[in-house]
Image (cartoon, rainbow, N blue to C red; front, side):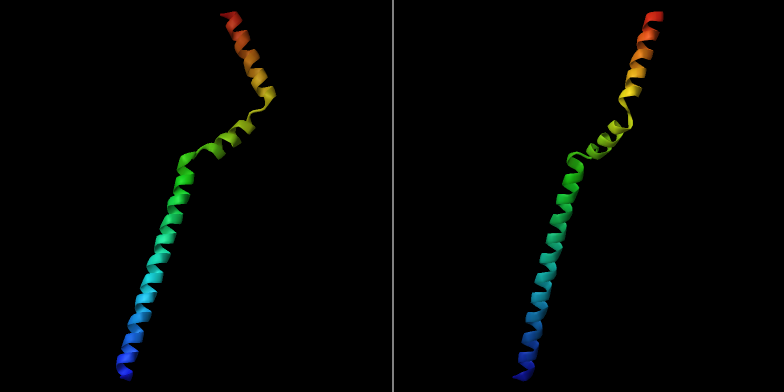
Length: 74
């Protein structure tokens, strides 16, 4: 009886451990899907914001004036 009880208890703990492990894997997979979705929904948003900040108003004005003067010479 003791041996049967030990075997029964070990099966139950193995089953529980497998269930918990499987649930944990599913949660990790779902979290990875969410992270991948957030990256792919707008992947360049942070880069666009940074690149827009690199160009100053003065530089834009100079380029506009330069283009206007080139246009007048043509």
